[in-house]
Length: 331
Ligand code: F6P
Image 1 (cartoon, rainbow, N blue to C red):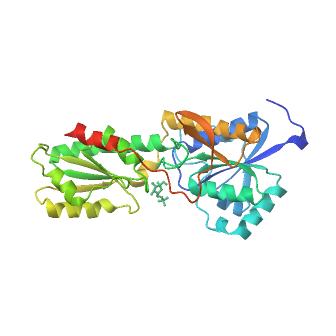
Image 2: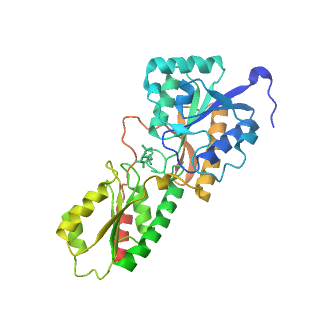
Image 3: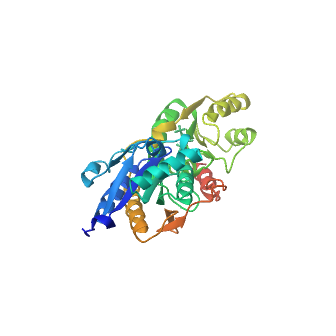
């Protein structure tokens, strides 16, 4: 391990902000251990920016992250802080960080997390690198966000189970996935789960259009699985099922909202390895003088990329081919 004199000591604060996602602990472990390896003293705070607002920071030693790589959630907890949105509160945070000689920060989360980090740095706060952590895979500038793979596998296992009941009892299921305004989860899960239809905010289908396909004489199946992305109204599948029942009264519809089950659980290999690589990359990026950027995957490679423009909407599905293929392969 490189040795540092006391004056050279670099202090880094680590936090997870916004919704948790599986794989965040792999990131935390990598930042703490790589940070120590590179001579940083690593601090963390609980509950995202709120821990900073409350001035409750604590040191993290390499042993503090033992046995966490396989755990879901985030061992330092995460939250959304409304107080941190206020300039006077951020000024207080900045002064506190300066007093603690913390010049570097790694913030794991989504768009809101980066907005907070960018503004704090702009106002004279620590140099920050962000790491994309959300099950939605919807951050502009990266093809992958930590947690997405675990979430899609969790949803896939659920669909396999729902299929048992759907086939045994000749039921028509609407299975709702998370993903806010992006259909990445729904599209992958629909294809891999053998669904017949996938409905996402980017590629919606009207109820009459869907009903027409359901009652088409070409369909010979006794059961049906439609994957619906929650879009901006979680639970919307209930209304859709009611509307479908009115037009196609001969079928029995059931709704299953997968919800927060998709956010939990032990992370997959991809989320652990991406988390480990991105965590180390953030530390090395700060060490080489980079900041106000995030770790990202672009063209299949890990890179440092600018923070997304805060005025830009989240990343959305632009390619309908997976959704079309899902339909073709299920017919
Ligand atoms: O951003 C991740 C996500 O899981 C979205 O898919 C979902 O809409 C949202 O968080 C729900 O968040 P919460 O219940 O924490 O407000």
